[in-house]
Length: 616
Image (cartoon, rainbow, N blue to C red):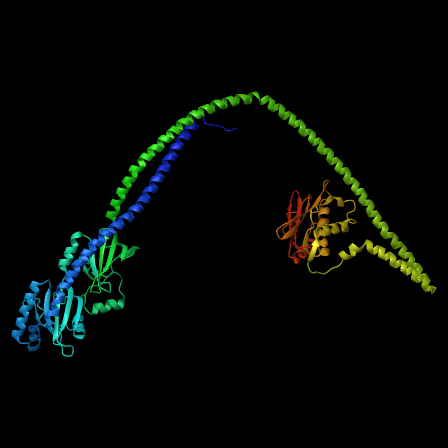
């Protein structure tokens, strides 16, 4: 009978607390899931908005960089055609050089260039805008600089390097003076970027310019200058170091790792440098026009993501709170309804208990009546067993008579054959060939009669392995039983064959299969010989592609000592047995692709012959 919790009982209170606890857990899980999803969405939204703002800022900084690059580029072009420059390189008189020095100083004062100087064809500076400074370039040899050699060979060059005299890095823009076959010298303007870097530092975001090798040339973070975006090959690093392009800078790589990569030169990087206050950065990468440089703009992502996440989670809380209150109200109403239903149910259970007490006597009377009926059925079952035993005894008597008849049928022809043989011997001594031939004919006819009786025994005695063929299981079992009748006369009724409803065929040889069956039947019959209700049952079970012939007996079973070696030669529990029957039987079954297995317990033994199924 189903039971219900009574209102105000401990079980009812426990269920009530469990319901509220369940609602709290589900609410917390839902809130956690919402917060997690909102966090992901806020991150994507913040990154998208941050990308727009970062690209706008990057474009402005890149435009400023282009302006800084373009202003000094016209000076070498103009000065390469200037007559004073040509005169100073051609005449090299003190007056011509002095006029050129003063002109270069005036040009630097009116432009954003850092320094202007002119070298002769051998690479020595003959005039410079800082000719009066202690760090004057006049007299310095710049033949080893790439901007000098490339200008002499190609007519113009741009080269970013560390100043050998000023120790300040900058972009060197050079142009050859004179024709290629007879150059007079090179005009060089150096542009430095301190003002640009100071301007980039105002928004407190990392802005930097790297060349084609990944070396950082310009940076809003001074400590990053002449570091690399990625480790340089040793040969390339040594080549740059030998050229003194960046002085003795170690060219160490920045600790920037890619977290995620997007399209249009956008990626999320993570830095682990002391100069980087934030951890994750959104990197904008753009090519610098008219150069082989790349401009990188790093924007911290955490402030934008945190702000967007806080905003969205606040909106989520404002939406979920009313929903939670509504759910709590609904649950409270359901709890009140459950309380009323529990009271009604408790009253109903009390009524059912009283009805059950009143009907207890009727139930006990019914049980006594059922016990009497069961006793009568048991008596009827015993009567049926007695009747079956009488039938069994009758069958044994009939089998004994059949066995005696078979013995008589064989003994009588044998005695007659002996008489005819003795008569034939006498007739031969008398030379009465005709009478001897008649006696021999009679002997032949009698042997045919005996042969008909013993045909199955002679066929069974044949030896040798034969090819598998379709064999009817029912015929093989019946033939084996017939061959055992003389051996177990009067006891063969203990063997019961449950013939299948349809004809079942297996791949084997009938004579060899009968040999196996006779061996197993004989062992089973001997095992149940001492049992008062000894019984051997034979079943045929058809499976998927195979057929099982099962022989079960209710004898004492197989001893645990010999069970593991049951199919080992010379293992037997019989005093006069050789222990070869089961070994030979399993070998025969395995010859035809099957197997012979055994199961044994206190209730008897069970042998299973499994053979491949054959088609008609």
